[in-house]
Image (cartoon, rainbow, N blue to C red; front, side, top):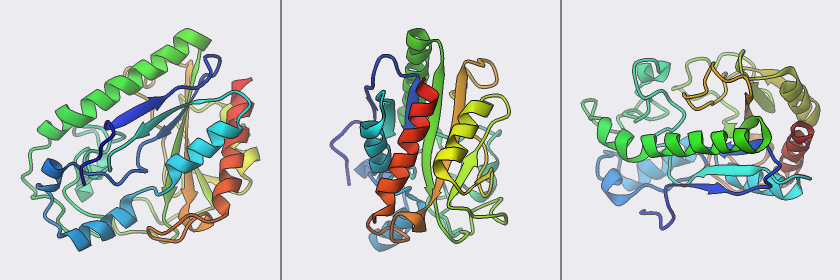
Length: 262
């Protein structure tokens, strides 16, 4: 299962674009030495990857980038979030630690043991999480330097039915959930997304938006929005092929990119 590609990639866009489409959870790759620390057998691991992976979101971002009038940049994780989850806090600030899903997961989506509870997360954090965070920070800084602002649009998906690991899954499960941040989500960015995607809910069933810690709640020129797409609108759940909904959703995402690139 060792991927040939680097663990993440920054795919260049137009120098005039402030937009970074961030795709952190689309991949299934797990290096062999990391796989050795996961206690699931191959069949169970494949099932878990079906549930936890935001399948086809890298393709949604790719199609959207191709359709946008000004090509956005794309920052894409090439490893599974079962290696590390680059969007978690790597310390006690992370509430998902309560269900064994901090930066390094020890539990599955259904509460089974993924890694031993006494697993030391530091080697994986140092090897994968920290370089990823540093590269994303540089990417945002480059957009600020080039355009005077940066707009991070997080491209995610989520299951149509609540999974046991979800801490706040009791609310609405709309076709598109828009995760917001009171400091970094501007009315213009939010309005563009609501208009492009149509039926949406805010922060249900998932909330927040990813911003590198160097800029988080410090730099108002960094805007951020999380786009959570319900999987049954574009693919066969839990880990099946994409359908025609992918093209429609990619077009809507391209509309958001165009609206905030002006």
